[in-house]
Length: 357
Image (cartoon, rainbow, N blue to C red):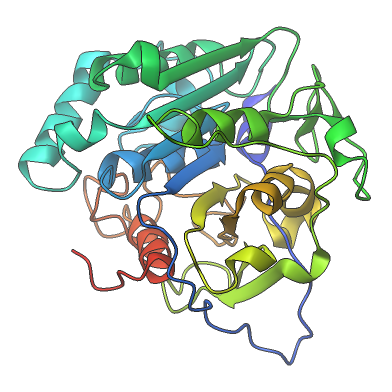
């Protein structure tokens, strides 16, 4: 794929029911979810942002799932590096020691979480061998980082390289049979809607790993018969968290989770040019996440970023576009990052800890 098309390909979009123009989205509902059952997952640019969240706040995110993205800190605040070293390899692989030094400096300044909290995470990483948007070697570099960081990587880290798969999220069409689904992308070729017809339920495999690995934990189980309800997909006002995001985000709340109870939370992040304003409802309804949420008492939040002059493709900020206007060395991938902070505050609102440090 040519460089001009790379950013546009770095994404899965999220969507939800459209609001009438005169309606304003409501605030997040008061759910008080289980703070010990929060995970974050993302695809491509959303995967890069998911890792930024997991490293900055490992005390908050017990699990991380990344599809088709590269190592933490890769872009180092430079768009040219993002294009030439974090998607293609025109500038070579990112240097592991340089990225580790960035992490150490952040940790010294209390801009990321502790090494001990990071060491306890569960992590699921997936990459297609035929990915021409984000080179598979970059996914291996992310895996290498987590092998160094985790306490017991053989038990906490699952790395999947899928032959004949391109760039996107693998889905199993059969698991979506009970709900109208879009035309899926060819597994190898990819392309919109970046839901790859690979016969693999990526969302389900990731959630099973993230929520089924603790001693004494109930394994997450999926069921194609648990058809998500369209009425359970809600909208909410994002401007209260970051006014540079899209006006509204989306939240899937199974009926069993209406009062919070002991339900967990999954943060699902789209990527460039694939937000709701770009592709509509495909990802938010047909990734398989809502099927698993319905069966396993999980709430799924789908935050939305919007296109802008600095971010024309509607990407999550994984190279520093929000910070570079006023920071010589953007700290977008730390607790000082504006988008990152907005996302964390959404999560805190849902787990009943809005004032946490």
